[in-house]
Image 1 (cartoon, helix red, strand yellow):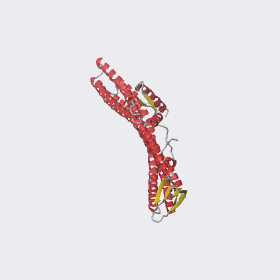
Image 2 (cartoon, rainbow, N blue to C red; image 1 turned 180 degrees about the vertical axis):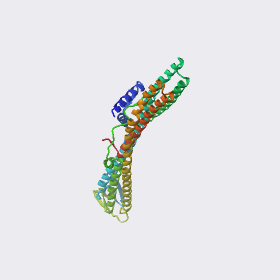
Image 3 (cartoon, one colour; image 1 turned 90 degrees about the vertical axis):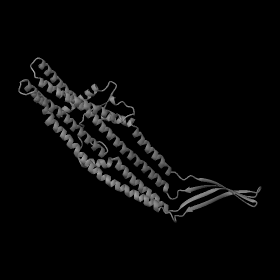
Image 4 (tube, one colour; image 1 turned 60 degrees about the vertical axis):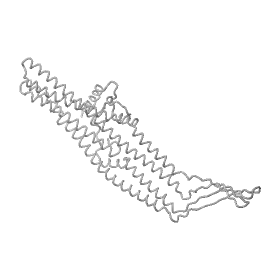
Length: 409
């Protein structure tokens, strides 16, 4: 485990050397912060919530009053009416609409949070891909440097008549293979840079981006039951369904109020009489809505059906969360243990192979094939450790996604 800090330092040094002078070396936390500030999709999600909030605010308002003017002329008498009509909130539906609107907005915010979490997960995966490509490039460059030095020595020996042409050609062949692998790793790195740049301000130069950090991060929690509780409490999509269920319960209560009579009042001024002898007074009319045919049956049924649908979706999501957390926890812990075990049992012993094979080759005990095989085994162990570490990191990111937050200790 003492080698991991050295790997982090090496990654940072490699980034500083490989990135352009004007480039940016970002940790994962810095990349997430930059995305939250720059990504247009996140702004669109928040603006969508504000749009829904503006629509919901309309339901909280009283109905507008109406103003009417009526003129009646019969014989010598003329009647003028100027009336204001206002529906009275006697059913108490306005308060329920206000409560339901608040729950709808809060549910929309939770759904936006779920979308943000999905975008953050994709960024973390892209960051991991760039970090892996950088580390693979670094390992291949180191291995290629060793093989090139070996090929130079073999060329010099061949010129001096102390080495064979076969040894030199075989070493050069190995160098060509590693150069091809290095070029493929560079292509992967450029693609990973482009995918990461897509999360920032449009027009961001991908070649300026460099990922910093270690592939293996802190270990995850060892208690799946605790993680399930965290997921049920913290998953924004699960919280959105709970809020939607509460909203439809409130909507059903508001619809049930349609069984009660409604009321409205008309009040205003009246002028009546013949020309030159007119008198003024007031007029008041009270009206009542009798719930004879429409008692809110359709609205109640719709709200009840929507509430049942949301409850079913919530139960299905709960089951998915519980199974997903346990599966992701198994993958994260097992991949991390596998990477650490592979480092201890394969990578560290493989580092001794080159020294042993080189000494034996100098003594004439081994041929060039054994020496090159030692180089290949060592390089392969290092690149495989990177793949296992990246798999552990991706599994940890997936675990963070399914619990809706950080799964660290």
